[in-house]
Image 1 (cartoon, rainbow, N blue to C red):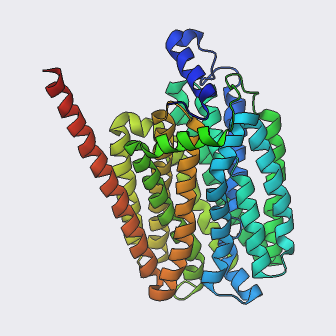
Image 2: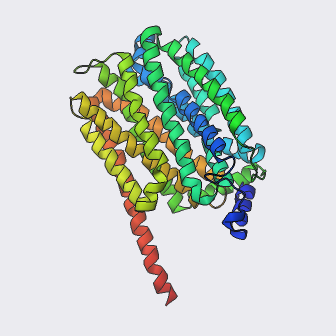
Image 3: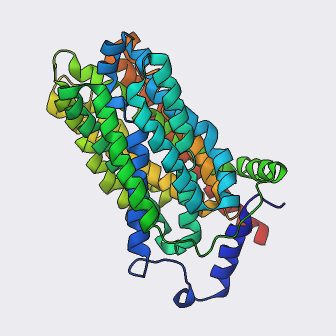
Length: 427
């Protein structure tokens, strides 16, 4: 059955089968253009996460300034991630027509422009609306980036390349929260958000100057019927559906924890100032390492083994974070962050590896599920915190990790059953 995109995807796959690796013109580590491409997409990841979560570390200050509850303030995060989740699939279709690099550039330009307006929001309603538009604009970047990598990078380097893009996400998330924490402590949350907007401008300009022009993209037609067929085919693939669910559940944990952690650390027994709370997000550096090494982890443990390890690491972190000791809470956040970013890098790269056609739509569906998980985690994490304190947020996270492990176990049993059927069919 034909797919919406895959003029690009099928051309690349056919070329890979027809020529030896030495003649493959796609980018590879050590080759010309690979470092520029890696750094450009790293900066795009930095800008995306810095803008997307620019208000997360500032929620206590926003609550105080605008006179709203934690649950209401959390919508400044949920609206952005929800907007991205809703628009990532339509944006991926546009990338098939107008090109990955063009759409990524346009997404960053619009998101940055909105980001410069966010500090002037007069009310929580206006702030949430601007954040929703910003999230929708950013929707053109994640799925287009992974599709660009799948087309322009050699298959053996794909997991590493995607891991570097995810690492840029972690750096953006970390730097955005650390910078906003210290700036907000001195000048308030509005100046802090404006600072992130200026940083994103610099990232967007450097991204456009550095990213190599695509050489293996063939424009496709964003016909609605073709798009529907492609999406239907992906959703009929059990492995892809499991990967989508895993991404959503991992992000539910992460979104819930980091939306609420600021409220917990401002309360007794910690009572930390805003600048110190912002610095807590330096643990994102652990995510940078775990995401960028996901390829080696998969080589040693396999994809499912890596997901089990990521789930176990996240669980250990959640349980440690229950302690009323700041060092143990920090260690818990380190483990949660490492587990999340490793799991996300493995799941997202598995989507690109599994989808032989319609890669942009396959990646878009993953990103949609991923950010739906983020929105749900941000909102439900705040509700759970209001109802049961930090223990309520941790309980929500443990349920989500249990879902990840259960889905991975199901996939393991399904793979074994399929392998057992093949010899029987041969006889």
